[in-house]
Structure formats: C-alpha cells, structure tokens
Image 1 (cartoon, helix red, strand yellow):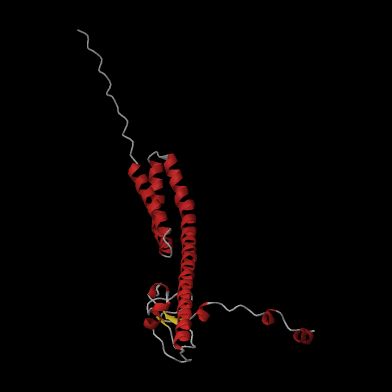
Image 2 (spheres, rainbow, N blue to C red):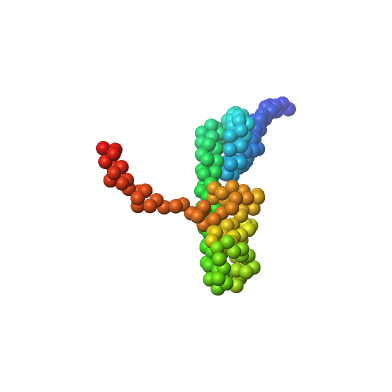
Length: 216
C-alpha cells in the first residue's frame, strides 16, 4: 500500500495588531482639550495641558502608523501638531474678549437702570419739596417719597441702596461692598452726574478766536 504524501502544515499569518484604542484615546484627549479651551479666562490653562497632550497623541499616532493605521496616524499627527495648537491659541483669546464685551454691555445696562431710578427719586423729591414747601437742606427719606414714586418703591438692580439726600442735593445709590459696576468701585456711591459723561460745551469744543490768534 503506497504511503500518502504528508500534507504540509498550514501557516497562519500573525493577527494584525489593533490600534483602535490608541485612536479613540487620542481623539478624546484632543476634543476635551479643545472644549476646555473655549471657557473664557480658564481656557488659557490649556496652553499648559498642550505640553502633555501633544506629545502623548504624537506617540499614539506613531504606534497607530506602526500597526497599519496609515490614514488615522497621519491625520492624528496633523491634528496634534497643527490643528489643535492653532485652536488652543485662538479659542481662549476670543472667548475671553467676547466675555469682556458681554460683561461690559451688561454693566452699562445695569448702570443705566440705576440712573433711571435716581432720576425717578429726584423727580419724586422735587414733588415732595414743592408740596411740603421744604427748604434746601431739609432731610427726606425714601418712606416719605414712596407715594410720589411709581409703584411706591424703587427696585434695586445689583443690590444697591438708595439715599435721597437732603433737598438741594442729588440722590445717590451706593453699591454693595462686594460689587463693582461699569468703572465704579465696590461700595462706591453713584449719582446721575458721576455716571453720565459730561458732553463738551461749544466753547470747549471749538477754540476761541483769541486763542487761535495767539497760536498763530
């Protein structure tokens, strides 16, 4: 009986090393760092985070390239070296500037509301002084002015307190000790004159003929 030829052993190719975990981890690090950079002011801390995240994602990208993920690895390198650093540089600057503009506009609006309240108090004090024939220097309280105010009270804007001051003096609003507003310091008293910029008069805006002659 003839011997059957021995079948050669079947060789199997070694399984390809997976790189999905490195790719997912890299993109999570990049996305979280970029999202954190959008936070105003605090986002500047990502400039320090990048010193760790960029080298780490580069290492992962090289591992991915070695394991056959050519496209994924190249894109990660581009994102780590170019895209993410550019985004981290711009995002905190833009978000912080936008926050400053937003806060400034909000504070100007709040200041305008306080001035409106002060003007309302001044008008009520004028009515009160006319009806009571009060002379200059006469002390008046907010309780006495209540019936001359629309609604009988003045609603606070940022927790400020109002002082009508004696007849002949402008009412004032005092900011809380923990709150500054639109250039006013914490605890500062605001009046309608101190809050509103004074427009230049015609004489101040244009030089006098004598002054022009002296300059010539």
